[in-house]
Image (cartoon, rainbow, N blue to C red):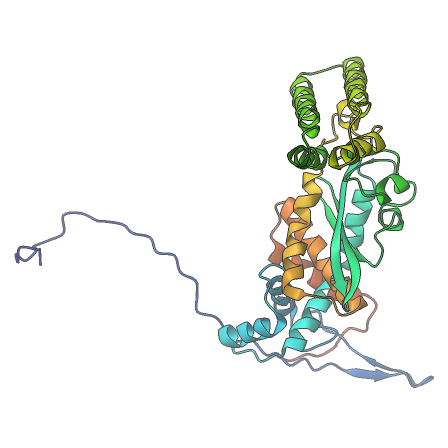
Length: 364
């Protein structure tokens, strides 16, 4: 019936409208695997047969393990909330502790891929590195990030020293490290690019606190902008070397200025201390002048730090660095984190059964 009260006779056309919906949550599938047991007549050792679809440990399958890890590290749920979600959506009863153990299994399954990420980064020409604090059982620890265009690795360590990049990258690492001014980096490598975003922020702060800093901040900003503009051209190696030489001379003229003690003097000391490392990007086209990539990579761990508070022990550190590294790298590569988690867990189960006795009879 129309607004005026008249009845419609027949349709005069079609007005299509698409509505997207997801299926109702499915209850869990429960399968019983009848695994045969064997005993050696000589030594008495007992061996239990395996089945390709039956996990080697625990009562939960690949999907539960993958969803537990993803819920924790992508959706940032506490483990008790992960358990609640499984019960509400699927009627699957598991505890918060079970959700934790499932996530730990995902980390163990993905550790080989974690080590592959480390090897890829060790072979990289340029690596962004940064670190931030995290608690381990209430004590100070550090989460480090090592990032390239295609890979990101996190490492939770109790040290903030040069031993960490030496351990992760290897003492013979030959690439360029892009970093801030922390002393661990020059202690590890002489091939550095200091972050211009950091020094420009510090110069701006010094200029706001001390009038002598205003011309220095202005000169640094103009130099940086000029370098970026000139590098947009297709410069030869010789032209880059000359540009680098001229820019270094300008930095040297800045640090020769006489200023009273205070923030500006501290700023000039920092510029002088990194004089060999501010202009690496001018000579090496693949090197970025800022460490924004590593700082961006630390954002997710910082958010999780506020939620988690503290990692409890070495197992927590292991899970934390492994799952974070896998998820970050998969996203960089445009891969689906859930499908990749399912893949690594499934592959791990298959590898662990490679030398096991096959089951001769199963029932579902």
